[in-house]
Image (tube, rainbow, N blue to C red; front, side):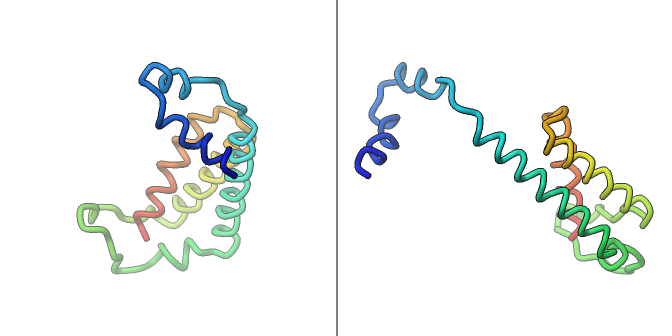
Length: 121
């Protein structure tokens, strides 16, 4: 237990050059791969569930009034068909993240799409 605490405190007791080299040492990427696979799986499941339960119609289609965030009052949902396309594309980008295919592009696109969906609610 004390060794683990000492390992966590070690970067704080180093000089600048040692700290610089410590933070740029190679690390094992297995945790990042696990996180990528787990996060991509959960997001594919969430988008599938959103489409399967027909929440697009329930939350976004045919409403006259939407609660919006103060500086983003101009954001409105797409028409119903385009919202389904939006969710399908989110699922595709999430599956690309899951597989590691064009990861940076798909992660950026997924981030922008889920941010838009979040700001609508």
